[in-house]
Length: 406
Ligand code: FES
Ligand SMILES: [Fe+2]
Image 1 (cartoon, rainbow, N blue to C red):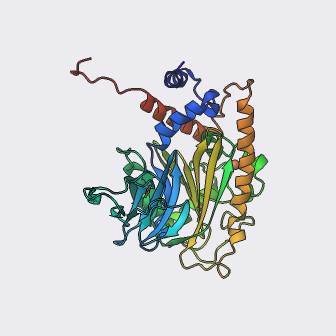
Image 2 (cartoon, protein in one colour; image 1 turned 180 degrees about the horizontal axis):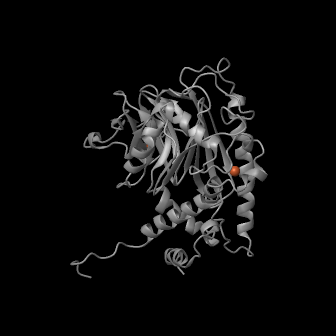
Image 3 (cartoon, rainbow, N blue to C red; image 1 turned 90 degrees about the vertical axis):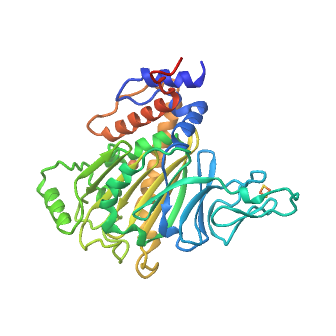
């Protein structure tokens, strides 16, 4: 059976509220469809605007099969381009971050300005017209200091997410933050297992002893626990939104911490002496959100943590973790990098192990889809349903409209 009809059939016949059939996690051809149906069509978190403070600063990331460069131009505008030379297709910027006045391809030195226009191509024939050639742009959206990109020519709606999350983030002023630390790990598991794992805390009590010192394990925004109600009241008094909100491809809420913690850290004590944005003093909890297909974040009083998962292969996923602190915080004086990263680095390592064992077990001929807990894994169920809808939409041709001849 061909892969597309097979995926459509399995999406249609799968048991609801159960893990997906094996090929979704293990079949390289299914994975190719995931790249086309999800990662080449949806909005992906690129970074914060503060990571590109001056013209010429750029960052490079790979989404599905495409290397992308995100940069600030001389007018201060942030744009994104495919990092693919218009001569013979070499990548131009090396992976990572950099700063340049122009972007010069290492192969034959074709050179582009920061607006993506070709400004130099040596020894080309007289009739060659470089004016019509430029780097292919990538759709880009910014709000509240965040930068998202979408590889599709006709990106899906982004406004529901940005309009909902924006007001929650305003007091945290992420535009004034700075990137304090970033680290990549590769998890030998399918990207959906990494996301599924990040959408539940069913495993947290047993597997994240450090995180659960401060993380509110069974937080429910409808809770009538006096401590939760008091926390919400204090946050609202300080001008912070509380409760929760959600849309098709995102969820957000403000969550109190536990054990008297002031932040998510190994001992609950702040890891940066400077407040992030206009965050009031005291325990403001975590303003957290998830955006499908690839990112979640926690914004605390003193730092923000952003997690992004991007697929490398059917059974390999790149996880990038970024820690942001106040723009005027100085390393060594206001924060210690080790203390800042410790909790989430430990948690990521624990989750890597869980995801890799999950992948290993699913590879077995003994694997069968298993039931999610509707009590402890409702967000995983939401993710899987979202994924199934997105893929069904991609794989199934739009129905013929009335009046159009068959
Ligand atoms: S491929 Fe870039 S200059 Fe030739
Ligand atoms: Fe975890």
